[in-house]
Structure formats: C-alpha cells, structure tokens
Amino acid sequence: MRIIRTLRGDISPEKVGAVYYHEHVIARSPVTKAREMDLELCDVEKMVNEVRLFKEAGGTLLTDASISDFGENAHQRLEISEKSGIPIVGTVGFGQKEHHNEAVKSSSIEELYEKVMDAALYGYGQMRLKPGQLKFGTSYGFISESENRCARAVARAQKDLKMPLFTHTGIGTMGLSQIALLKEEGANPEQVCIGHMDRNPDFWLCRELLKEGVFLGLDQISKVKYCTEQTRIDLICALIRCGYQKRILLCGDMARQSYLTSFGGGPGFGYILTSFLPRLVRQLMEDGMTETQAMEIREDLICRNPKEFLSFEG
Image 1 (tube, rainbow, N blue to C red):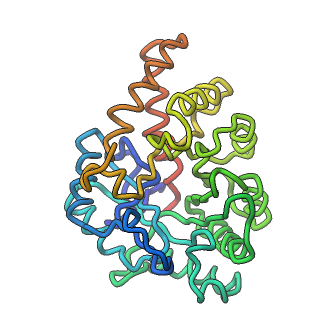
Image 2 (cartoon, rainbow, N blue to C red):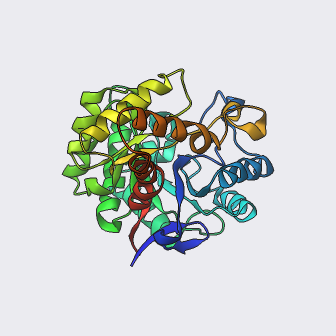
C-alpha cells in the first residue's frame, strides 16, 4: 500500500489535496558560526499561525525540508502540525558542506548510510519520529568531498528504503552530476526531485534533467531576486508543452523570517495558492487552453505531482 509518511504517522495519498513539497517550519543550523537571525525559524506559535495561512488558502500537507539538526527539533515540527491541523513530512539526510559538523566530515559513506537508515527505520529526535523524505545537498558549481560521501550514503539508503529523495542544488547547478551519482549507487530517479532549479531557469538544462525521469523542483516562487515570476511561468509553460506537466513540483522554500507573514514579512505561505497559481492559470488560458485544461494542470502541479513524489510503499 502506498503511503505518505508524516510526523503524525502514515496517511493515504488519497486524503491529500494541495501540497507544499519543500518548506521549513523549524530551522536552525547548529554548525553555522555567523548566525543570521533571519534564518532562525524557532518560534512555534508564529509558525503555527503561518501554517494556518497555508491551510486557509486550501493547503492540506507540507514537507519540512530542514535537516541540519538531524531530527533534534522534530518534536517542535510535530507540535506545529498538531496545532495547525496540517500533516507535516519530516526529512532526514545531510545538507551542503557548510552544514556538515565534524562528525559528518569524519564519517565514512557506510557510517553515514547507517545513520540515515537508523533514523528512517526507527525514528529520530527525542520522540523517535519517522521522517518521510531523504535529502542531500551540493555546492554551487561543484560537489565537495564530504558532500560526495553524504550523497552516496543517502542514495544507497534510497535504494534500500525506496523513499522520496530531495536534492539541494547550489543555485540550480550540479543537477546532472547528482543524477549520475544517484544512478551509480542504484537509486531510483523516478523517486528523486532535483530542487531549486528556478534559481537557474535554463530551459535546456531543466529539460535534460527531466529526460532522466526525475521530478523538477521549482521551489523559489516569490523570490524575484533570483528571477521574475514571468520567467518561472514561461519556463513552466515551455516544459508543459514538452509533455512534462506530471514531473514538475512547485513551492516557495520560505526559510527566512522576512518571507513569512507571521514574522512581519511576506509574501507568506498563502502566496502560491492565492496569487501565483491563479496567474499561471491565466497565462495558460491566454496561450490557448480552456479553463478546464488549465485547472487540470494546476491540479497536477500542486496536488497530484507532489503526492506522487512523496508516496512510497509502506
């Protein structure tokens, strides 16, 4: 039976509607020396309010992609889930090299693999909650030695666990190299999402990634410091014309206080559902689709596709 594993337990994908597949509700890095307060998401009550905005906009489930604490704060994510009424998927794995502590830096691939497997099978944090997603990250333009070991460990875990795997790309680079590494270790590309690709909205590169069978993560929506929303919409429309509407995932990755309404910032967790998707639907209709056709694509991008990505045999 296919399930989505949340911190509150396994649920049926059939019970899930709109999904944010890559967000952060509790985020802090214990290894970052120059702590930037904007990146510290530690206020449970404010995040409960933010997640409620997602729920009010029509959201039904989200993934917390934070992994630097290796589940230490999973109980706070569970508290946010219970108070907001939104199931939250936890994540286990390793980030890019800046987030590797000394233990990670000195561990072998096998040791890192065992650490991931233990967390996935038996839970992590003080409540031993089970994550529903794996993750690794690589740097901008290269893969460091410790990133390579972490990536191979997570890829091997994916092969054995058959769980969804998200990859962090440094500014949308190294995706093809990540896929080559994943294949070497026997991971299943169809259960992999190559993330942050709208920080490098290169149509040719995105199409090459999709040809490998992965999901394409466009998860920087609202961040016009990287590219305009129209650039994202044009990329989505071009990829849809190539037949990839079932392999695109959308999200905002709003991992800063300044992005969140409850912290006095914006645009907040409601933005994609209330603003970006209606604009995308209008563009699809202007390009010649009927409203029914455009709404079907919306359903794929924000509901069916992320459910397919996060589902696995339980």
